[in-house]
Length: 116
Image 1: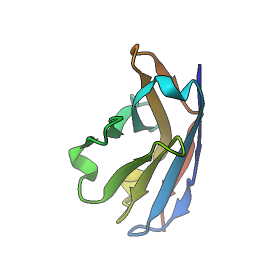
Image 2: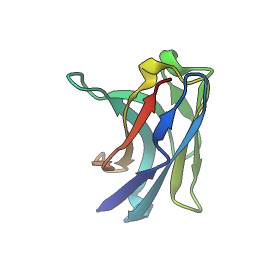
Image 3: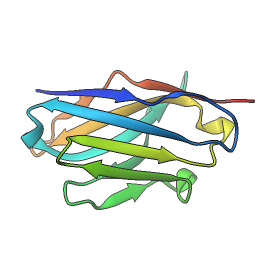
């Protein structure tokens, strides 16, 4: 089992920045890829950014150039730096871990609200 806990969400004005953190515990040696997803009411959860164990990243087009994903394997953590935030970035952000056996684990989520 892998446990994930997100932190860093909150209320920010348009154009502002937030940094989300996700701490992993449990069978961390089994984790291959990690990522961030987001979800708004009535919509499906969507990928925002992902990073492999080796550091290869995948950022979706809608946030490319504004969001950066990074990973600290020594601290068993993954981060999402979000700059130039827009109201449409408002969502619950979820941390995801995918194991080498292709099992998915999710954190409870953290709310990000972009509003003036």
